[in-house]
Image (cartoon, rainbow over all chains, first blue to last red):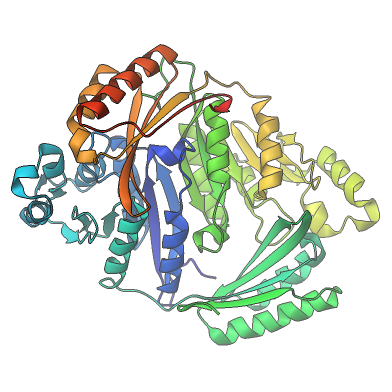
Length: 262
Length: 262
């Protein structure tokens, strides 16, 4: 099974999405899926996502817990200039270090805005926990930062994506997680027992079963994931035979690896 | 500020999204936004969302913690017939009760499938923690359930939505949370100080500031939320004046209450 830090070279990560707007239903979060895909491609298993409000106490608790439980923590949101941007001060508290003006960050902001336009709210974005390393922001200059295993990124998708790409170039990543998806029109309950037996025969492959509605009828997507190409191919072949045995044809088959969907 | 169980008639809820497919980036979760909107309309503040894998230990821990910390917990996913559907057994463990055949659930499944087609995987969906009340499933019969303050629902959006609508008709809800959104083309740092002062003058209104890219340029959405129509209107008027003072015109204005967007 994936998701356990075993002999496989796999790292586990947690994502903290900081933002009242998502909890209020005002904004559809799309960062999670983007990050989940990029991490998967990099052999990093996303083990938990927490969406939390812009509240210091809550951010401190989440960062402390997840930083302890996971190899990597990524956060999005709350690093801008306004009163509701509390991530930097909260992360400093979580690690019990000072929040202080980072001279490198200050220079980045000065270069971007010009010293005469570096108002107090803008200068606030140079306040970084002591000892943190900066994550460059190619879009609006205000940097993210890394402290211990926590990677603090912006919430605006375009900026976050550039920051994550940078981070993934600098941290230790694992073996890409490969996956096959087989769709059929059988109902879950028809093949549940065969799937259970298949899972028993392939302990290194994670088998997921996802019913869905499309065009008014129910379908079923079966997803196999693992780092061994050989196991994955064998389990997929067996799955196809199971579907055929129950009188159905697999309707689609996608193979995804580090390079995207094939 | 919202989000605190104060004199206001507001309830706090947590959502647990159970599903490897979301953590793998295979599926874009849309349930969270739908649930967040419905709860907000019902005067229930969504205080945390946790996306976790289909793993018993992880589900037990999340349900225990969040059931203790929040007025209501809602879960989605993991109540189907397959080997990776572990939610019912995990919730039973969290509350230290037996997972047993629920006669009412068994009858619903029998009526739906016919006794001759009620295979062991299908019958598995009648296993419910002892003492739980059922949540009807008008689509595929297999019910959700309520135990203490935890509401266990399906992950398929159409079924989940019917289940949540049912639940919201049966639990105590609060005063609808009203919100105004004002968009402008100012950057955050320009109005950060004025926003901070505005927040100070309206402690019962939550003011959020959300930069975004549209058509290649940055814009800013300012969201005011609260249960007092009067406070909300006054704070919104002041905000509009702040934007005008900085030489910009508010570009959009939406007022949302229990009935949706006006």
